[in-house]
Image (cartoon, rainbow, N blue to C red; front, side):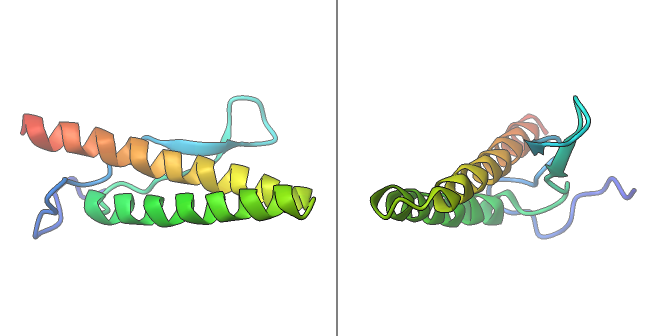
Length: 97
């Protein structure tokens, strides 16, 4: 894998590819992982969109007694957390460089 940073550098840095989300069928395995080298600014924007969607799905799911929407909210929130965690790690890495 190419270890050089893409250019131009985003204000916040780049994702590092360490954060994962959603448990896999095999214990200790995760289903999804953030890909390294994505702009952390963009990752944070996408996390915000995921959280807004999760909030809406949660509200509708509870109000309309739709458990599938509550589960969707759970998964969207987990994906958003992985994006934010990975972007945060990239910001710290960029600050040290």
